Image 1 (cartoon, rainbow, N blue to C red):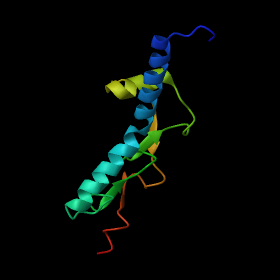
Image 2 (image 1 turned 120 degrees about the vertical axis):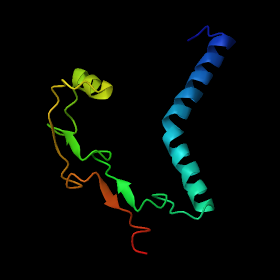
Image 3 (image 1 turned 45 degrees about the vertical axis):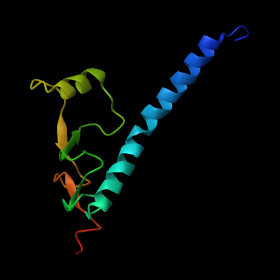
Length: 110
């Protein structure tokens, strides 16, 4: 990197900013949605739905067999595009007892 031009430096800077924006997008979205809910007088966490999606199964009630670290690219692609002939075996989520959600701790007490 001895002879780097200004265009290359600008390209690296823009790439770094895009990477940071991509990584922080979910946190920024959560911040804005929380502030909008509070300004409307709704529960900050669930938006008056009185339930939160399970973090392990993401609200589906089932997880892939083999645990969290078993990653198979083709199985993930079949599951993403909704192929009914998928070979991915799914089991009931233990964390939420296959319900897919929990009661909101902030507004369910009211």
